[in-house]
Length: 341
Image (cartoon, rainbow, N blue to C red; front, side, top):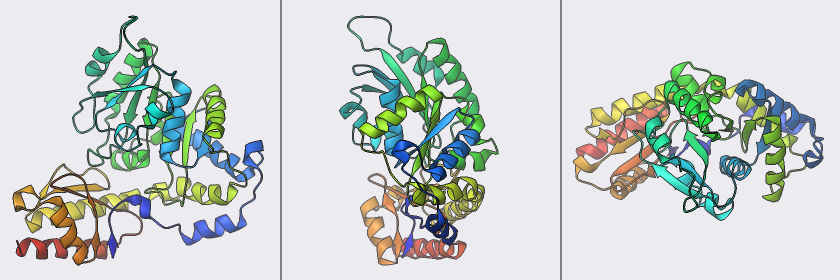
């Protein structure tokens, strides 16, 4: 099978497995694991923040950020198809007790003017706006990069209104690879940031949240409350360090494969839902007269795994464990399917 469902399916490299075996460890709840401490310090430096915290997942990182920034009864502003709103089980409401207010964006990009208009005035009838949440790259917009200029204007506006900004940067290094703009530069346009180490970067588990010393101090307590306090965590922090420092340099390869796949989709006679910017390709099969579910079945019959992303949409994600030869094979399968319709 050629697995193009998600970059979360990547397997740890041999170097990661060896690093895990040899990792120096200690009890991280007591802040005594030297390997995770080194990882957090490196991540904070790469993201331009005072401090960082290793967490078990991107979802946990985002939830800890919301819990730390907000108070129950507040409202957070985020794009209508943001991962935090769409894929995290309503955790912001279940745990933080906050109300999401979604803003319609263009390929995941919210206009700063729309965000400013959504900020609640002081009124006993209304919730307070407690947080603005951005996503870069944007998953449901096909891996679209949030423009730095938009982030800059949004952050300035947020600061003027005393509202913190959290960046869900699960695939932030894909934005860096696509634009040449450093992850640190993007992260500078938010108070806090979450990056995922187990997607395109290939670590077996884990994410990082970064921010001020005071934020991380409070975030550490929220991590404990959520059951995320770990013990000899160096065994997973060691491969995460390789993901952060080495695997972040190779994402161009995934982007090239995604572009090749997108071109092959169009050559086969199918349509793209969005232009391809990073490692996510979304195909629309509506014009071919079939459903997304039908397409999924046809792909599976020929050994291709993807994800249905809507009634007529199918998502492919390129990653470390997919070779150029497998992209070529996938394109041949797509051409075969189209010829049979």
